Length: 56
Image 1 (cartoon, helix red, strand yellow):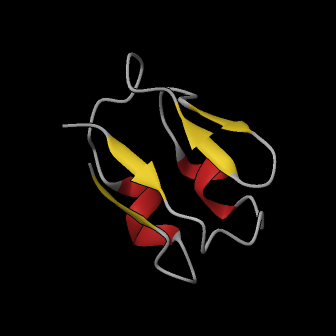
Image 2 (cartoon, helix red, strand yellow):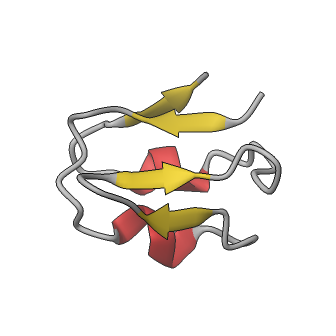
């Protein structure tokens, strides 16, 4: 199940830096995860300083 980014996202970019499959893109007003690319590794959720990423 792909991860999703909540409205708590602060656009810090930490999640994008660690995504091994480049599934995270800059959106407006938050980053977004492409569910077709996400491999559900959880690296982004572990890196998010505001805990804005969770399983869908």
